[in-house]
Length: 254
Image (cartoon, rainbow, N blue to C red):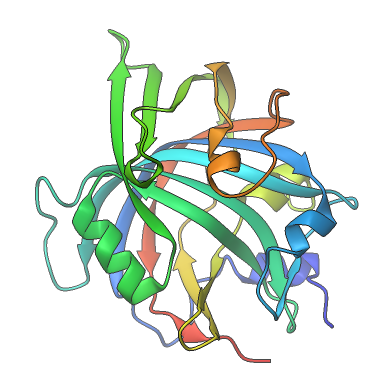
C-alpha cells in the first residue's frame, strides 16, 4: 500500500494535462464542519481499494453545506432554474492503493431533481433529492440554511446558520486545514459493476475564512448510518467559493 505524501497532495492541485473538462460549476458560501471520528468505524464503510486518510492519526467526517452556481456542461450555457441550487454533503477522506488522496461521499443532498438524477447516472454518486431553503440577513452576511431529505420522510430536519469572521487566507500545506479542504479527487463506486472510479476537479486553492456558526446540526450522520455526535464540530471553516472545472470519471487503477 502506498500512502499519500505532501508532494502528491500538492500535485493534485495542478490542472490535469491533456484533458478537457466535461462540466463547469461555481461553488459558493461553503461551510466546512468536521468532527473527529473513529477511523476503524469509517474504514468498515468503505469499498475495497480505499483506506481512510488520517491527520496525526485522526480521521474525520465532515458536513459541507454550500451553493451550486452556474452549473453547465462544457458546450452549453447555464440555465436559470436548473443551473443554480443548494447542496449539502457528508464526507470523509480516503486514499487508494496508489496513494492518491481524495474524498468519499456518503450522501449529497440537492434541491434540483435533474442534477440528482444526472449525478447518480454519470458520476455514480449517492445524491438525494431534498427540500432546501435559505435566508439571508439584510446585509447578506449571515446564511440561514435548511435541509430536508425527501427520502427520510421528514421536513426541514437540519439547520445551519453561519457567517464569516476576519480576512481570507489559503490553507498552509501540511496543516489540518489543508488536509480537510484541499481535495481534488473524488472516489465513486458502482455496486452494479463493483467498479471503483475516480473523478478529478480543478480550481484555485480555496480562499478560507474563520466561521461563526450560531446553529449547526449533525442529523446527516444518523441518516447515513453513523452515530450522531452531540458535541460541537471539532473544526469549522468557511469559503466564499471557487470556480471549478469538472472532469469525467475514470476507472481507478492500481
